[in-house]
Image (cartoon, rainbow, N blue to C red; front, side, top):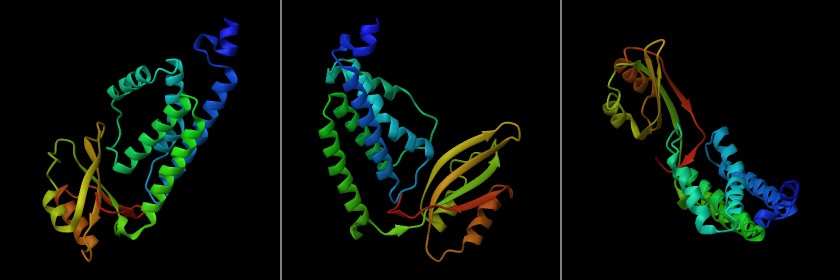
Amino acid sequence: MTNYFLTLSILDIGLPDFMLCTAASLVFGGLVALLHMYKNSYSKNFILTLIILPAIVQAVIMLVNGNLGTGVAVLGAFSLIRFRSAEGNSREITSLFLAMSIGLATGLGCIGVAGLLLIAIGAAILLVQTLPFSGKKESARLLTVFVPADTAYETLFDSVFSRYTKSFRLVKVEINGADAFCELQYLVYLKEKEPVKTFLDEIRGLNHSLPVSLRYLPSIRGGL
């Protein structure tokens, strides 16, 4: 038992090799997280996921003794889990796939390949982010609206959004059982020269004058 713990000989993996690959996975995961944070909006939990994910994938690949097909099948089981979070955007999906690819490489012991992959993909992302063709900068705003819990909110504000926004997306729905209120959060891009106060006044006219707030987010290239 002790011999297996110290050398992982049952998996034909030496403890130094395992620790080296794990350390590389965590370092590369941290670099993926930094890359995702560049000119992008993010949450603390998602950044933590990007840091840890390569090490988790690497451990799964090593536990199936380098059998890539079995490892991918095991990781596919994770897709059955649905997280209670907002829908991810394309940048988040790219970062997740990059983190998983790095974990696959380090799990097979190819630390150099993982490093080269991170450098190549990272350089491409940074290049696209800095070039002008990647889109015009637009100010994303987070609109928070409270409505009665029994309100059919799905299309309640569509007419207002069509007049005042270029695009919008519902990103959060939370019902407060104690107060019988429903909190809605929309990511919106307002049209140029449209008065914000008038926009908020029309929203308040539809939600029975319950609280409404509009918060600026970091500039994001392109629309929703």
